[in-house]
Picture 1 (cartoon, rainbow, N blue to C red):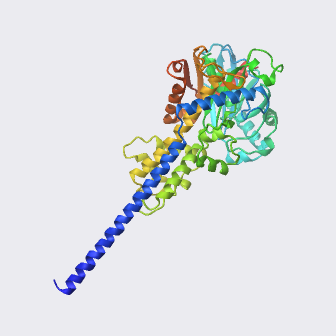
Picture 2 (cartoon, rainbow, N blue to C red):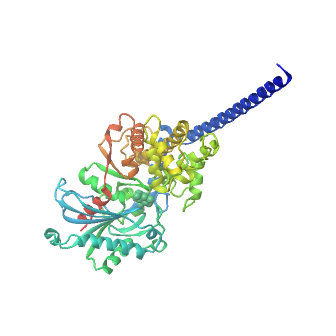
Picture 3 (cartoon, protein in one colour):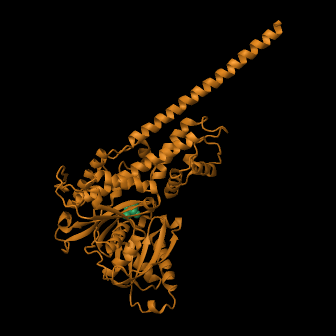
Length: 510
Ligand code: BGC
């Protein structure tokens, strides 16, 4: 080999070594990055972990806070609002009744015919429409004008239906899915907005007064016979079907629960209540807080960026409900993605995407649910969602798996915490197999309470439509209660209960 040939061979070898060294070093760097990401994910998993011991602490804390909220006004973060519903419908209600349900995004009007026997409730006539976005931050007058005119159109569409013309007075159950301090079963003032609503002039006003005024303005002759929280509507419907129903839970855009409490346990209102022996209490558990809740830096950031930042304001809701879950996932996944830039896509596009690709609130959560429920071996649905939203077609399988894992960790925590909340209610009323609580402290070890059949109704998109969430929740309730007690507690899905239940309550309060 001549000198020139030797020189060329040496330079080629050096160049190949250099390329090999660069490739190796890139691979090493990329492996290191990947390992760091796996570390972050493991950390998230640990921080979100909810072993049954921790869940039992949350159960006790929930029961204790419920007790404190019933003992004195402001005695707990849990408002434990009186509903003045001291008798749930008996099943003997008869006639045509209306309901109007105002929730975070939708507005529903419905009519039901009650036949006087539990089984003879007609298929309700329902109309649903979205609430125009601008009305959520406008004035109370604008919002209720819209509500009243939709209601009027609904009634006018009854046309010449001869049976409906015989209805003498139209009684309405009004489901208002926000915290209200009730003065009676048919009046109450808004305490504050949740779930993205922010109509300032409405806070502190009588919700029924506003609706009644708007209906009068439109010449609509209807009377609000019952004002109910959505949890209370759900409880009423499910109790109508099954008298062993003692509590109702909503897990959708927002989350909350109500239950039937003994009147003598509502210490803050002693003397004020007619004594039928019991009353439905709206817990407003979105506000629940306990140091036993597993909180991560993503929760803290989410809280800081929320419209109601404050350490623990609506802390439970922010860990559980559809308004926030997708956002927590986005923050967790975006953080992992940040560390992965340059390793994840061959096209070199950054995947800071999650921060921007997915909308907000419930939309974000339903995208998350779709990715989480992708059971194809190559996570085709995840790839499709990422491609549709980000226009990146080459996200490797291992990254797709990582995103699904983040969805799983956040969803599992939410569902298990909601399960602990449910068992907390059961503990408060002595239906969890323990002896409940005395003087605000959870008792342990005493298994004396009776094993009565106990039904808890659950409504809300997150529970009804997100099967992973539902399975995690059901599993955790059984795990906390233990094998002996779990068979006595039935979790029942309720559809449209909040609206239909309000119509039934209008009937029983007319
Ligand atoms: C509201 C509750 C409601 C729940 C479920 C929460 O944000 O404060 O009143 O029951 O959402 O809709």
